[in-house]
Amino acid sequence: MVESVLTSDFRAVDANDAPEESAQHDGQPDAWLANTDRMSRGDRDAFREYYDHFYALMLSESKRCTGRDEQTCLDIVHDAMLKAIRSMKPIANQRSLSSWSRLLVRSVSYDWLRREQRQRKLSRSPEEIDDHGRQRELNASQKIDDHARVLWIEQNLGQFSPELQRMFAWRYRLGWTLRRIGRRLGLKPGAVDGKLRRAIEDLRNLAELECDD
Image (cartoon, rainbow, N blue to C red; front, side, top):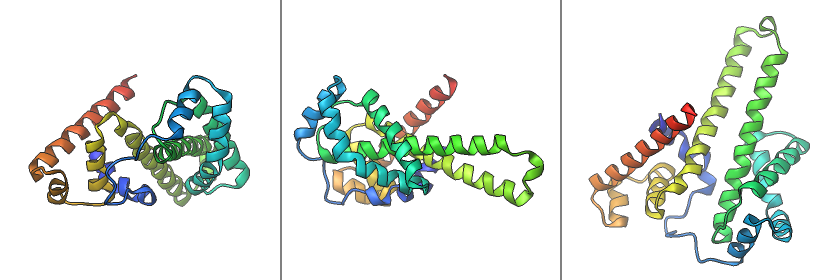
């Protein structure tokens, strides 16, 4: 299941964020490392700097994910900012922090969409929904769930080494062959395949553990 989601959706959902082929790392630490470290320790001034800098990016991302009106997206960004206060950790640079912020607001956006769907279902009787409407709602719900699973995978890729994260991006975002990835890293295609399969199995086991909790 994890591998099928990666293959079908990982590249499509985040095509706008795909790293350039020449990118080897997230860059050098900058002022945001100190800022996020202060945020993680509850510094209000540091959070204000983060809010001022990333608010517009998160609002735009929420609009893109949900397609909802501005007031709804403002509420989503507000919830995302509260979550940022609780979950912030030191992050090395602005590029990495931008990626983290996008993932955060996407997560909150998809949670909001799923709650909206549940409330809509509860407010309507079965007689009010014809077969076509029921199928349309089912398709919309499946799409949201698929996006949420892809997002979960992205959030949990951080447990892997930078090299393995690049391998995931090259394979599932950019569609590189195993041979091409191997040439970039000085590995045989079979070794690349083995590393990716073991990582996918680790993700699958993690997903099963979370489902059991």
